[in-house]
Length: 85
Image 1 (cartoon, one colour):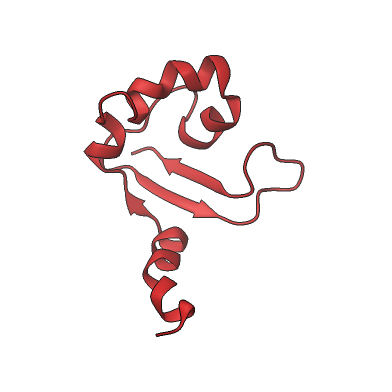
Image 2: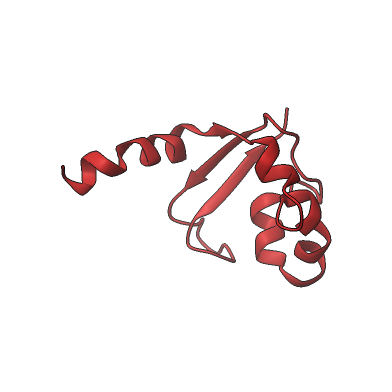
């Protein structure tokens, strides 16, 4: 199987989005809820990626990834966009 074939489902999720799971949101110590204050205080790039106006998206919110980052953007090469319901 080619890399293209193996990576197709991941590329589809990145392009079309996926629902934010309760696990990713609520995981003890490493979920978005627990990391929110650290993102805001020390990791502004992560805050820009995962938080909307400083808020953690609710479980079920649509999450999308785009490449490359917008011109003049900061942070990681990819953009994770959480669309709040």
